[in-house]
Length: 287
Length: 287
Image 1 (cartoon, rainbow over the protein chains, first blue to last red):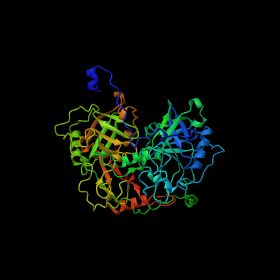
Image 2 (spheres, each protein chain N blue to C red):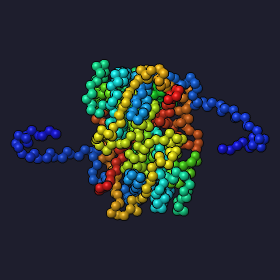
Image 3 (cartoon, each protein chain N blue to C red):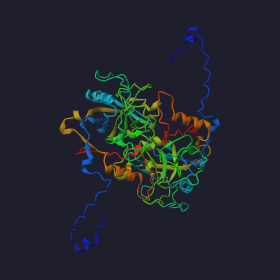
Image 4 (tube, each protein chain N blue to C red):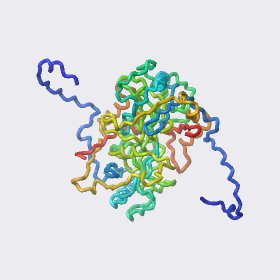
């Protein structure tokens, strides 16, 4: 570390430099909004590894309702991460696919692929399914559009509902997350219930299986799921709190514009990959 | 498995069904072309894990020339994979950044970000940097374009040249590969020398470091690099052989069209993510 020359010369404590003025792309305090406790789901894996999912009830209400009921019933406790396929997905739930669902869970809700009645006023400024102009987000979620429909894209860390060949065959009990960068072909074909906002590093770094579909061939390969809880059901004293950076403001728009048109010598592409949108979340308080 | 009813009834061995006629999207034998031995680079990691890189001399001749010289000098032997940053990259080479380069290596070649004189006749049919129409490939490589320039995109498994802040500061001795799906902002800013065609599962599943930039804080975290060799320098009897599926033919175009417009009930987006192009390679013969 360099010591300011004049301070050294005077032997005096230098006054701290004045804080840099905020940039147009900096968040202000009000941009950070609480994620409701019942939209935060805490997955505890063997080895005390915590994975936190932000649920998306606005985008997939029926499936998120199921997911909440499964968590409330402690249905996932004792299940496992049973599939890790290279360049594809990590998947978890009941590896036997035979565990009975709680009565409260709808076995096969209608698919929720597109965003129903997505408001064009929510600044879908660019009809491009793959890259984004400023503002193609909603409440901190990425939104893809072809100008006619709108949907959530399958990005790294997205949480999707596994299903059989036919569209309306997933309850939400078996979930997956893409662990590479090539899952967009699932868009509009699989229901998305949320995204991982903490602990993705555990899901992404699990050993890949060479067995068919990446399903672990033996039990010891699986990672046990100790528990899955909605934050709203965790005692208040231990309840984790999360916030997201809101995207419906000038600061975020300036941030995206900067990414689209970065300062030289960095070259921009005029847009950014919709899966590279800087959608920030943060844990409030100590872990 | 269901047994054909008539065969069961007759107690006879059913004749095997005739082979299905080829689809327009199926490769024919001639579509598989040899990757030249001096474009195949074999990285052997500790634990006998093999990672194979296809080099891209056509796209980055100066940097690939360096990479070949480093391999020929056995320069990487005894170096390591020293950086694994979640949702970003795995990086390898000399973690001290002090190992002297061979005399034959140019320390800082001019950046090779764009594809020089890329021939418009090579079927750049769609001016979209993020998704692709049929045929935006060359020799089995993905090519992105904005209608004016053309370049290789940073996809999962792409091999890029690490550098300092200024563009012309990478020799090719330190290499990285994106391990998530959000590296496109590196496009036109980093030189690409190839892509991983075998063993990506080893690079992608390494434990992430929480230290700054994902650089492992301690030596035991690193994965040792036993050797790096061009296939052309491996004795013929042990030399691995690879082929790629060529992309300049009607079969591949039909394959892409099928991905863009899949059969119902699957919904297509009218394009596919350029990083999801099905660019196949295969090892010829036993491993």
